[in-house]
Length: 160
Image 1: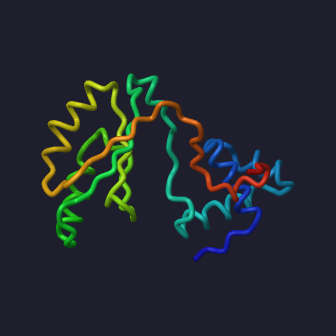
Image 2: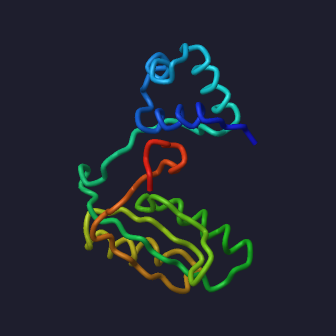
Image 3: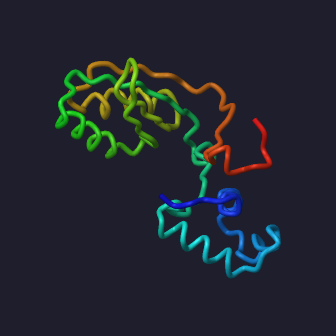
């Protein structure tokens, strides 16, 4: 496991806020030169701490304004059934995230669609075509209160 110090955490927080932030800007904020910032970033990429860079997209601006969390319980729990479900569900474009969870269900899906009609079509024609689903329970997002994908300890300026 990679050793992450406070400077690394601050670099990660900067990159999370703005992946385009230059090494020079980060170095100025941290009172360092750009070279050690670059070396730290490369080390964290090599060690798998930083796994990639991407744009954050607002689905509402693309006509996808309904977010649904769906609990899925499977009928059978043998390894091959679990693996098959994972493969099948990841081929559904509407599924943004899929988690294998403990508790009353086996999987939690985050689904993003345009509206209730599109969700109904998704359930009836796509999700229902996956074998071994025993139960699906939908939770419709009415208002997003918090969506912070950064780990709280990275941003040392925030207090929770």
